[in-house]
Image 1 (cartoon, rainbow, N blue to C red):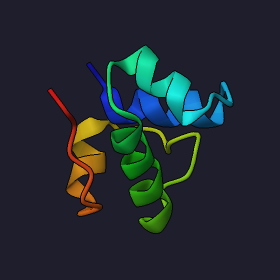
Image 2: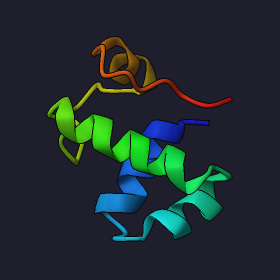
Image 3: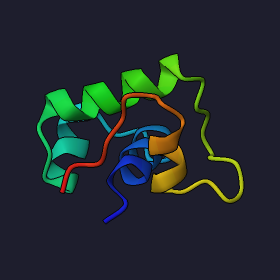
Image 4: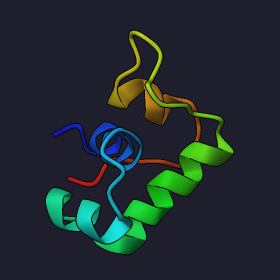
Length: 68
């Protein structure tokens, strides 16, 4: 599952709260907050640039790693 991408999509496209995103993705609110905050610090914008996937996000050295 593309967790990081899904969290960012739900946050910025759907405008969901961290609590609702956590429930939808099966994550804790803390993990959702971590993903969103690390993406902001790394300058990752939404929508993601073409060709960006989970591997590319993890490769940006953002500290974001997908939960399994």
